[in-house]
Image (tube, rainbow, N blue to C red; front, side, top):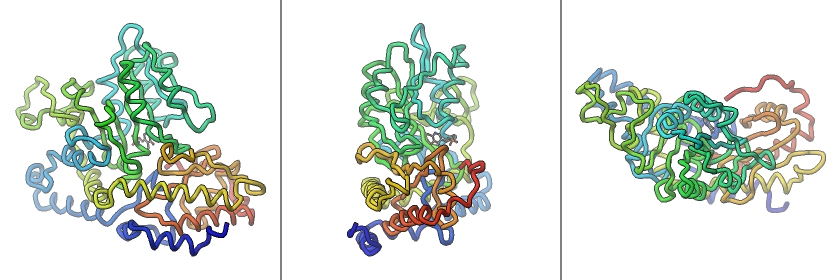
Amino acid sequence: MGMHTLADAQARDRADALRGYRDRFHVPEGQIYLDGNSLGLLTRDAAAEVQRALLQWQTLGIGGWLDADPPWFTLGEELGALVAPLVGAEPASVVVTGSTTVNLHALLATFYRPEGSRRKILATALDFPSDIYALQSAVALHGGDPARDVVQVASDDGRTVDEAAIIAAMTDEVAFAVVPSVMYRSGQLLDIARLAAAGRERGVPVLFDCAHSAGAVPHAFDAWGVDFAVWCSYKYLNAGPGATAGMYVNRRHWGATPGLAGWWGYDKDRQFDMVYEWRGGAGAGAWQIGTPPLLATAPLRGSLRLFHEAGMTALREKSLALTAYLMTLIEDLGLCGEPYGYSIGTPREDARRGGHVAVEHADAARIAKALRARGVIPDFRAPNVIRLAPVPLLIGYEDVWTTVQHLKAIIDGGEHLQFTIGRERVA
Ligand SMILES: *Cc1c(COP(=O)(O)O)cnc(C)c1O
């Protein structure tokens, strides 16, 4: 207890080499923003890139396709190369395009190839619903029965799924697997390297949905031999609501004919030949479909600058320290016992934890509202999870310390009881 003082939190902040990055963000007045895993905040760098894009459109008109800096024509590839170091990939294996769900569809349409008795798609019981809808529709497009062919590996505790159970389910009836890197609710980080290797041994291509790990956890997709990955740019990557997403295609899959082809995936040198015979672009770029949205892509160029400057290793180190600190404070302050009734739904081992902590409570919906009223922005996931993401570019130890005091004070004062349980915000 003695070590968990405000002064101690402040001392940790003073020793934090990353503390200066907070000033690069527009933080809404008076907020401790712990929702960066759902929608990252605007940085000055991202805003400046949008201004620059607008100015180039203003001054160059159509000339911007080739003469803007960077040229809009190759924006997806250019940004892909900038994201690549964050996921441990060679530049041409990453492209910035589409949305997480669209990219998942684009890869399923190409690489889910049901044949004979190998028709099933493996997923988990804790997946983000959009992924499951995509898998169900992919199966149906191939004339299969989604109820039979989408197999969701069960969770023993409702929070996590064992890698061993996923691997055991990779039978010779499985044609494709989609696995989250980090579970969106509990924050469990799965062992990507192990799952990728198991898939390769069993002839099951594995796609990782990295929406909750891109920008939060370092990856080594190339070294791990990952087949495919998709992720969004508006969570930890701070590129704005609906920002253009990311896609990784390992080089051993390059050259396949995209199942959802479009002219933006065409060989860049010949795209304007306007011929009808397909000739795919080099690398992951071939899975682009249409013209990239400049204004939804430009912010990523700015927000990535912070990641390149700080480095994923340092960011991960601070993120783990902050989430561990948060969980320790909650426990040491007695919040997991009576009368508080909180529990922690996130794995305690560093290697099994992403960038957020799931604080569970029977009255989580109303506590989340009470937190917001106190200026702490959490994220609620029904029925009982308050997600708290102390993103290391933005959040410090004092913020975490203060948040835990709020969690305690809300129960002490019965403050949450004045809120009604209504339809929660969807974001
Ligand atoms: C946020 C999230 C998505 C979002 O998909 P969009 O196509 O960007 O709307 C998909 N999958 C997971 C796991 C997510 O967390």
